[in-house]
Length: 377
Image 1 (cartoon, one colour):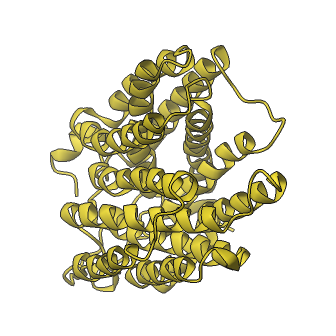
Image 2: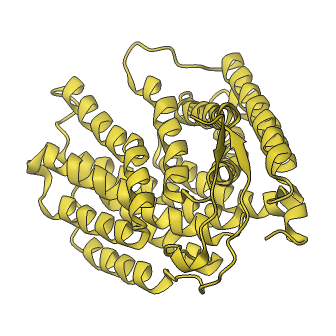
């Protein structure tokens, strides 16, 4: 095996579908719909938590593992087959099937919803990353509405179970139309886009740093409101804060610099999340700031492997479920107060290190942050 890993460029004539910033916004709306339907379908099909708590927990974990960790092997396949638009469309169809078969189908719903969610994320996410021209804003515009979709799914799946789901079929049909309309192919050209080279060890080291930052953010985001009153307002406000943070964070990172935005956001979020003491008006700004780094880490992983956007989208999702999984399990340590503060600072440290190493390897190809607006490809 050679000690250098070339991240090869692909001539535009052979490249698969991609999406513009406007297309990313439309795909973000489809993202909301797919997440809302898949989460609702799984929760309504899960065993009653009061009767068989362990079975209900395993049911939900099975979905999360399939929908998030499954994105790594499926992402490799989507890139291999250049099947971005096709994967997104298949994902929507499988999500509709999960909803249609109803709550009595058990693990069939988990399989359909998990695969559907994963394939949609990979297909649409790959189009957004490939069309984003190395900017964080399109990624934020795409992933942000997913937080709203998750919040809606939790409400429909747990609180408002009497509300029928069949009207969501029209939203899923609209999502199909969105994928078909916004997916474009670049014009053919003879000159490939330049891409950086990485030593295998360097690539793995940088990817690990980004993965650790994402995993910590996932864990802290899962336990950050443990002390808050579990009200309907909380169930609505937290997804809204997460959506706004992801969406706005991408634009601010491109404007002021990825490293600058990430450090300011995480350092400001640390005391708010750690020492809110259940005060939602302190925790919510913390969540908003904390989620600003999501589009940065997502596009940073893409810069490590610019010809594999689906895999680049799937790897942070694997880190997300790895970080959140301990918080799902009973009798497992849940960080609070000072430990949350230390974890957020650690997330900032590894993200800073990873972005600095990425910049040193790729700056002549893809400048980070505000410099990218001046002549980057």
